[in-house]
Every structure is written in structure tokens, then in C-alpha cells.
Length: 210
View (cartoon, rainbow, N blue to C red):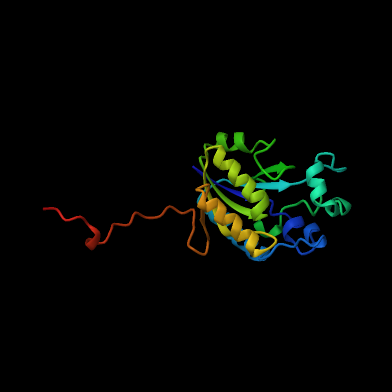
């Protein structure tokens, strides 16, 4: 069974008024990634595929942020960005998240670390994960690598992800694909959750029987 996992598509990361934009870390092509992900979420719903959203959020006061994350971007803390329960920490409206959708909150890049994501997926009977989200080379890649080590079969939708620069986005996807950690495809290439009809090989490709 497959599930769609949407990583951290929150106002703070994706909206032009979000905290990342305010600290000079706006993501390239993020609007396209959000639009593509909204299409995939709708496709998952049509095909009764579970949709799981993650949110990277901190408690007020940021005691759970950790020294390394705080050191990476101290300006984010100054803005009080990505705090649970705030607009900045909420999922972007374009995704059309519903109360029935499953949401996993996290405080580290890897969505499996210290969260209920793995037992949730096991409980649903999921063995294949399809990923969309941000940031490609940080939280998406960290979670994809962890999913591989948790023995899930992984697909990443390249046009449903975004990073700070196109180069960082492409390098991350190339590394995941080159080492067999994930199959990288895209909505533009025709990905859909709908079961594909079995296609018979053309006559010329059939083996000759003596």
C-alpha cells in the first residue's frame, strides 16, 4: 500500500510573507511545487491513498529547537518563526488539508526522528512512500534517506519539491536517485496514483516460437 507524504509545506517555508522569505531564504520555484503538490493531493484522494502532512514547528519559547538548528539560522528565532499554532507554522491553504488528513509534527529535519510517523505508517499497512515537499536538500532528503533505512520503497516527485536554489534541488535529487535511495519522477512526467492498465507488448516484441 502507498501513502503520500508532504513534507513541511507551511506558510513559513512557502508563502512570500513567511519567515524564510523574511530572513533571505526564499525557495526557488516554490509556487510551482505547491501547485504540483496540490494536484497530487487531489489525485491521492481520488484514489483513496492516505495523505500525511508533516509540519516543522517549535513550541513557544523554542526549548525544543536544539542548539544546532538555532545556530544554523538565529534570525528565524528572532522572528519567532515556525511556532506551533501560528500562521507561519500552518500548512499552506493551497493544499486543501482536511481534518481527516493525518499530520505529524516534528522538530528535526528527519520526519521519522522522535515522531509517530513510522508506527502510523505501519498501522496503515503502508510499504511504499511518495514524497513531495520542502526543502528538497534538507528535510525532504533527510526523511527520504531515513525512509529507505526503515525499508520503505520510496518515490520523490521532483516538481513537487523546492530548495533555495535550483542547483541545490537538482544535486539532492541526483544523489538520491544515483544511490538507489529513491525513484525520482514527476507529475509532469505523468505520475499518478491511478492504477495503470496492463499494456500488452507490441507484436514485434513478442518472442518467436519455433
